Image 1: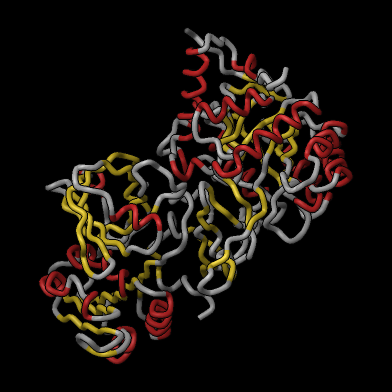
Image 2 (image 1 turned 90 degrees about the vertical axis):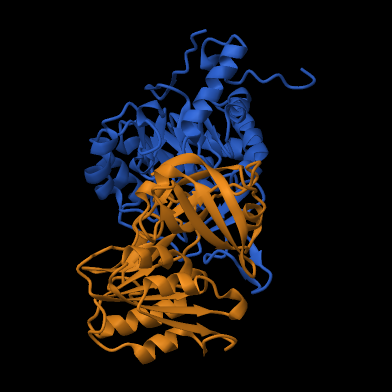
Length: 306
Length: 260
């Protein structure tokens, strides 16, 4: 059975619904020895800031039960270096290029959106959810007003489709998503990491130099699936779901909960072929269940009691 | 660089709390250079998210084998220590930049502390025929391994234990400091605890000599994508950051530890 895995978000057609999550896939070339990037639906690149950032001190990672806690702190070469050094490389492949931007201020987001508007990127992912930097970013993402303000400003600054990446560290993620939608977001992606801490009991100090970090991996998956479903019910724009996806079946959970596409993050560290393996898993699920188009799965969840 | 299934040939006690594992991995054995590492899924049922990076201690291209030695420190290395011969191990490698092998060097020093000694063995073999001084420091006599192997490859072996139970008593860095004179070596290769590495690199650097150092840092992806294992380095304009997994783990001693 031939299955159609292509999906559309904000007018951009992705070959398949599996996107590499920001911060786990570098700028793509790091994985090119292992994976044919033509077969990765999209790549959301390492979070960019207006100026280069050195990031936090090390250790920046700790393993946790079924997950990891990280605090890289947005180390990146800056948006201009991304434009000159990375876009031309990524442009050779069929994968869609998503520029993840993180700002200290609204003006940072605007300036980055303007600089990226004339480039070959396919979409902007507005990161209002990084928990590992002191200023800006997640400070915008935890209130409806903050998300609305950033979304509105970026919407005005660019013609590119914009996807707002949401933090799970909020009381009501659906209302945050609605704020993004009402100010012109083409999609929302969720979840970013859940803030956490790991303590070394010998030293009585947190393992991470930054004390706290963001939890990701299979440990967060049920939380993420639940939040994707809540957001799916609240907005009309596409939802891109992520959180601990390791297999095709994991991805199917997100699609059923309401996601149009998924992102694979932490599992790339375990399995460098994770993105293409997840796509293959989705395809075999579709073939086994007689599903011709992947979009038929979006929101096809049957709730108990219905 | 590749991901493949390597067959465990043996996995035996090496010294107190340390294991020596031989793997059949012809593709890695052919490509491996000293100082590079492999990134291993330690758990047979894949219950740990992260791989464990372990340095290559020796490689035999003819036999298609590589040796790794590791200390049992946490859950990952404990699971690795339970793997039996004949089992398949999911590994990525060889990864990272290794030590330079420059046959024009006439005299070199190899300085290792604790488990940092292991990757230096393959390096000593690559410099076979060169005038080599080896400085090896261990915690205690029960942890002394590779003594005879280094003897075969080197001209002089300096051995110390922290508690004085074998060889010189005290730290190997102090023995190196006493022995070293400006201009003595074409290159000083270092791998071990940070305090040792810093002391040796800064001494050698301040004398205008060259050193190469292998750094250790907690890693995520192992291939330069996640930027978790970042280290500070000197740049033309000040300081910057590089990845230990991809830019390293071996760095030019002139650029590491910008603060010393």
